[in-house]
Figure 1 (tube, rainbow, N blue to C red):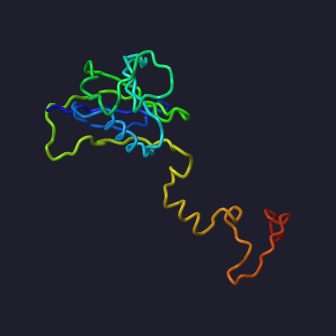
Figure 2 (cartoon, one colour):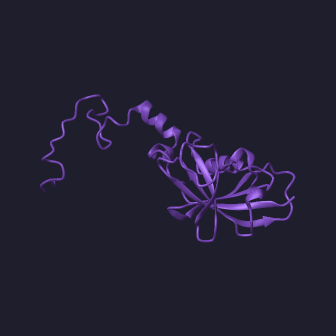
Figure 3 (cartoon, rainbow, N blue to C red):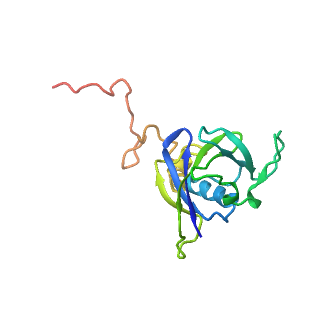
Length: 186
């Protein structure tokens, strides 16, 4: 069975992309889950794919669910639609939209058809990661959960610019703001 290799670009920066290999018999829901995993996004928001052309114009919609919004045609559903059924050519493109409020857009392009699958591989699979993924909710996602735990444990938000108000023995240290930056007389 052939394998399809897609490249999912972050729309704002084409240097940020992830390559995903998937069977044509697998569903868009699996591609959706893999893209979210590749970019380290959660699964809390609405999402949809649009079949696209070489000018990145939106065509037929393949949605996670039927949402309360106007449709030109009823959407296909990700859980019911196989990837292979919507690939119409060797350069097939899709636009993937995640979180309709934040409007995360990814350009998904078929870049290779691999003739034979590897029986040792569990598809879909992320095969390449380039660039730093955008932060879904701000700096916490960029720095990771461990930083948030350290910040909470040591209350890094209290001290100003990394300086303490006490010396090593616990004595108060008075900083004279006027004296900071002045040179010592020789």
